[in-house]
Length: 244
Image (cartoon, rainbow, N blue to C red; front, side, top):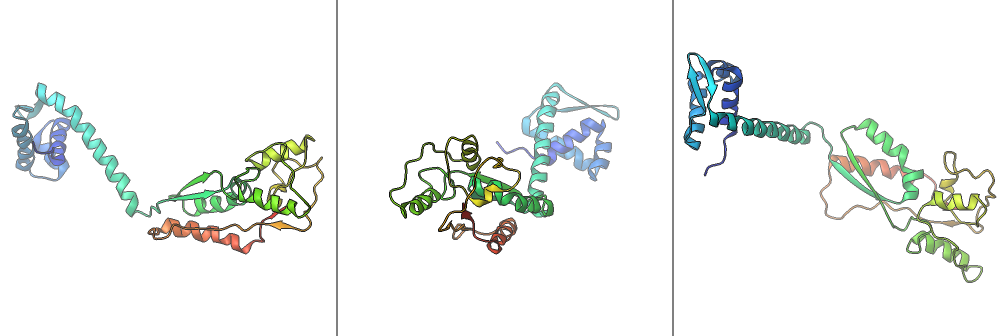
């Protein structure tokens, strides 16, 4: 069986809603015979009468009443599909996925992301955080190994009393006097867990880590990806992140 023809369904719906083939033809910018042909093609396809004429008015048959429900639903879905696909040609910049650490997401990226969304409202940015080399506290993180290497300069590194994958949680535990920790200096600014009653000292010698910006090799770039890449590249102009 052939697939449904949306133009035929549209003509059928217009005839029903306008009450006549002539009015439907005016709405669709077609001739009246063309609209009649579209509806007749539907009737031949289903082998049932869909519309009955009484005078100049068109009325639904019982079969037509059933079809009109499906026809309207299909046309609504077609309209939504058209709108969605037009977005790709109307300045839509696409979806950009960024994987990062919680530390950078909390302390570095918010102003960059806010500016991107202000300048490019149609840009979709999906952020993903998880265990990476930049998560403090986790035994599997590179930062943890960096800190362990720094502590090893003075002897075997001590075993932690507690482990967290969130810098603010680590600071909170320190703030109530349950221990000491090493956290990035980025996390010590205003607006975070207060350090008013906590003694803060820089490491000596200093420990630092490099933050890398990576892209999947061979993946076709989009305008949105280039915008996000350029915005994140501004981090190169900032001093290297350090542990304190």
